[in-house]
Amino acid sequence: MPVIRPIGHEQRLSIIDHLDELRKRLIWCVIFFVVAFSFCYAKNGALLDIVNRPLEESQHPGKKGGDPLEQAARYDQAIGRALAQLAPALSGTRSALGALAAEPGVSSAARTEALRSGAQLQKAAVAVNRAAKTVPTKTGRRPVTLGVAEPFVATFTVAGYAALLLSLPFILWQAYAFLLPAFDPKERRIALPLMLLVPVLFTAGVLFGYYVALPRAVNFLQNFNDDSFDILIQARDYYRFVVLFLLLMGLAFQVPVGVLALTRTGIVTARTLWVRQGYVILGISVVAAIVTPTPDPVTMLVTMAPLVLLYELSIGLSWIFRPSGGSIRSRWDEAWEAEEDSWSDPDGQDDPGDDDPGDDAEPTAGAEDGPARVS
Image 1 (spheres, helix red, strand yellow):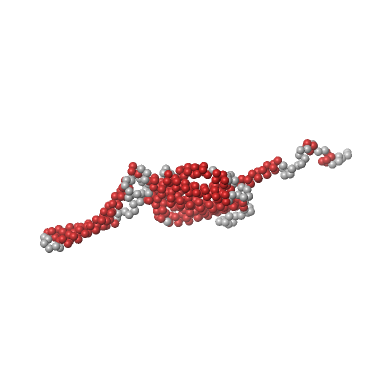
Image 2 (image 1 turned 135 degrees about the horizontal axis):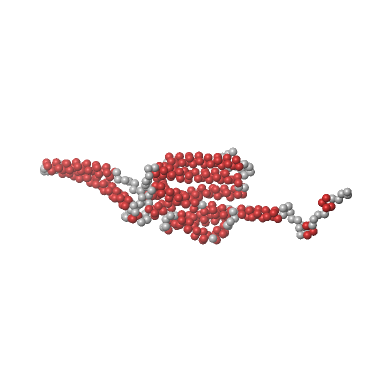
């Protein structure tokens, strides 16, 4: 039995065959996840840099105020700039003292002192130049770890989440291939676009969350009332926040899938969605307020904008792909009405003599058994 390719709708499998197929598909999903995890763990340095970038960009060491750690970062930068300017000044002073010591008429004691001071200035210039090169160039703050094993656990966790994100399209395809035989051709034409849209929209939501919403959320939270706190971010809490935030953004981008599913099943129509879109936009604003953990209106509006656009797009798609041969709900209603008719008339035919009370009389013996025998 093929494992990657779905089986046909007309094939008949036993319970054991279904369980065996499920086991094989789960094994393939685990193998794919292990391969993706190995790749992500091998690139854990670049992966951690990507995840830490919103936190690093949220720090503003160049502005006034801020928490004490940002003030210390500004002090280090100021010291570095001062040392970089002091080294050539010391070298120039040493050269000037050497020139003055070579002038005629200078006493031997003054010449000796000038040369000695010049040598000290030269050593100081070398030390200052060396110190200026050791000033930290990366002022962005990174998450802190508190436990002995937390660096390994945090790296392992981030690699696992990244591997799950990479494996999601393959896992969804395996789930679709396992459930495909349960759909008839009409239902399959409905399920296939929805299954293809799920990973695409989820990936789009994750990318939008990382590049647009997450930096604004982290920037707002980390700089909120920062004059009153020593802000230290634990790696475990920060990575959990990032994963949960991106997961919610990916789920929020599934609006077209839900709308298409509702319209294809006949629960709602595209016209109803268009008429009631004001209430839907209000609901989207509530969802955006819940998904974004920041109370600032900018992040909320940035999150709302793509959701509203996706909803408007889903209305158009619902109108284009509206069911022409009857929705699933209508087919179920027809099947239910046919079942009720079969219950009321077991023979499947209307008896024209049902209203004749004489039909309910008991048949005579001669009619059923023929002529009576003579003993």
